[in-house]
Length: 136
Image (cartoon, rainbow, N blue to C red; front, side, top):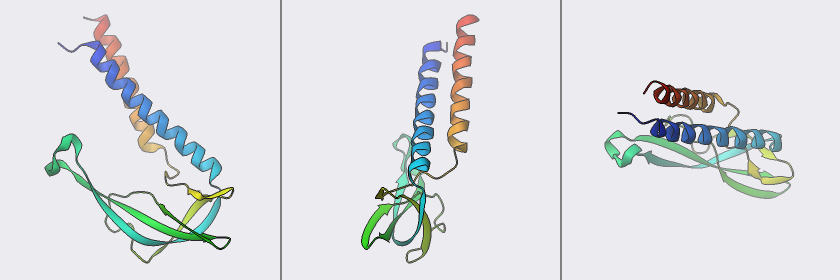
């Protein structure tokens, strides 16, 4: 029989991770307000393997970008993508940087959609845990 504690643990993990991502993204958006053009210097391919199974994994593509602010060159990793055509080495991309700390970029993006879906699903799982407890 499904125990409510298992549902609550899953719910808390989902809620915690999604809230953490939403907060980090909000901080990055608030801090990184200056747009600069960066050049893509490298793309790192990384296989995501849920549960440690390479057969079930998917590829992520993480671009390394270089940009110059006030004569100083900075290098950073930008937003990962699941599409191998999203970025091209040698291409240019507009990024948002922190004008007070040009080494900090917004590599989290602007959209909270996936995190809001995860947060909502976590809340549904938490409610399911309560219902299992009530109707047991």
